[in-house]
Length: 450
Image 1 (tube, rainbow, N blue to C red):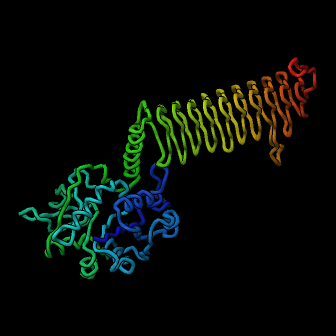
Image 2 (cartoon, rainbow, N blue to C red):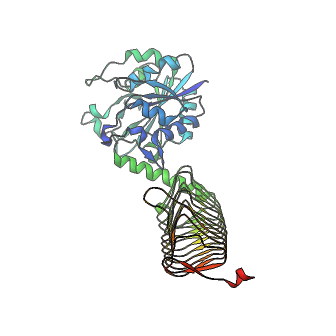
């Protein structure tokens, strides 16, 4: 059997009440369209085909080069969307799996089961159904007295009696491809002028029968029509991601309060405490303690690090680094092995050398700090003169006293010291001690004399 997958993703998503196309709404850090493309590839077919329409260019860009694209210029319904793909798929496959782009929670194995059943079925159509109290705008599966599927009635056209039917159509089908292309022409427009793919069910029921596969896990068939549905889908995906990492040896005190992006990587024996977020391409080593109330955003964290109640974004921590509580490591910063950044410390585009310590209530911007240096509480690098940023260099083993202002550009030599409350406006030589406003040289340390 040759198999292809077709994803219908042309709709406006008006119930979302958003200027953002439905397929671009994010789930666990990536657009919905990326999730459904992953599902399609997991079915085992060749390159998926994506039908796009509303905001087509934006959806195409978000999908990247992961699909073939078919344009539905007028949104005339799901059967019309499939018909648009005929020019791309005619003669290219024996069977075609079709599902909706706003169904991002299918497990690939569920759709593989659909495809496998379709390849063996006597009739031309196999579909997935579910039994649920909340129909979520899905159509109902109508059966005859013998239990055979006879038709699907869309939600907008249900009679009061049909609204009581609990079996719903989940919007995933496997068609015998040759039959599909032939029968699409028999679909008539609805009173709204749309062509429904579900009308093919009645035709298939008369021409060989329809096979229905029940799906028990309601989490798989959360169709996203509203922002409430989007939040429900996010919860399901987050639960799956967290379970995968726990199975891989990551500890979570309260998994429901941990948020991990789809592309984060976490080492064994790391523990994540509640209200912690790992966003974007974040990598965390082994044996770390993260949280509570911590955000790592596109961060790289080495082994045995501790980040408590802090934010780390676009920055790197080597091994055995500790931050917080209430630290903020900003873009371009790099903390070498054994660095400690205390509570209410902030660093931007700054490198702290091995074993350096940055006390509480300090800000370092555009700075380089040597190994073993100590940054006293309240230290600030005055790196911006109103027009441009300037660098501060602090040498190995330097001691920066509390409330020191380092007016960049400035260099503090190896082993130098500044007195508390100093305002440093000129370079400080190795081993020198400066104090005052402006800071002036006092004497050399004993270490420097040796």
